[in-house]
Length: 97
Image (cartoon, rainbow, N blue to C red; front, side, top):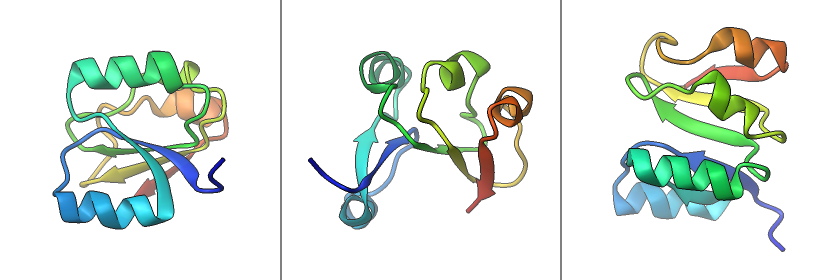
């Protein structure tokens, strides 16, 4: 079992970036809507963080499906399409990168 933090990555990254992130985190790479839905449905219980992009966001239903989830890392300006009320109700931190 890995001691790396399980991350769900919701947008495209180069293979170099994926490799660099994989050294630090246990990544589940899901850049398409179908991969995203499947990852949350099958592995949602383990994810502690999500890396998303401005136009992709994160819904209240997705947040609810990830009981260990504690951090939204968001690339881009603003939090549009991230359900901040659902995140804050769970005490989930939002981070810009």
